[in-house]
Amino acid sequence: MQRSESFRKASSGSPSGGLKSPPLPTISPEGEVQEIYRKQHSRIEELEKENKSLNEARSELEAKLQKTDEELEQLREASGEVAELRSKVASADEKANEVEKLVRWKILSHVSF
Image 1 (cartoon, rainbow, N blue to C red):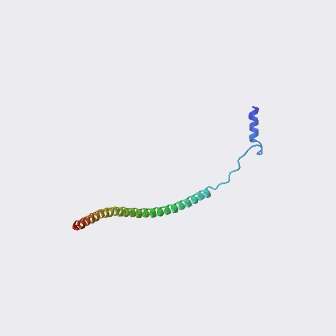
Image 2 (image 1 turned 45 degrees about the vertical axis):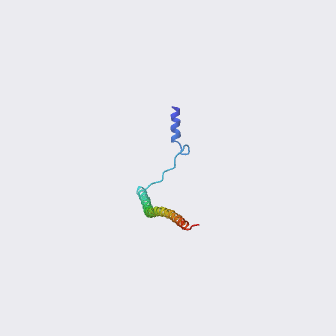
Image 3 (image 1 turned 135 degrees about the vertical axis):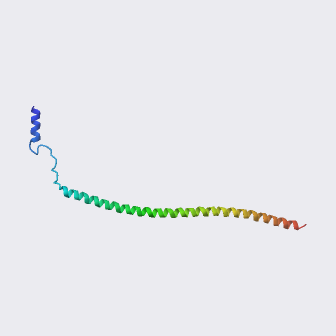
């Protein structure tokens, strides 16, 4: 019994004797709610601006991607054309060498020693 009596005295005693939390500020529910709404509204506007900016950037990047894809397709087509032209040049070179050999052979065959 002594223990519980001493505990009650300590808890109901002077304020300087025990630890107490600081008093809570008085809150105006209406003012606090308005402040929350104001902050939310401000944040929503900020996010909408950011969203708009990101959508514009996305559109620009999609346009760049489309343009780059078109350029890549043109380069691939040109590369195919270049390969075809190289093949034709190689064939023409071979034919030119054959013609040159025939011309030399004909010249040599007409020249008699």
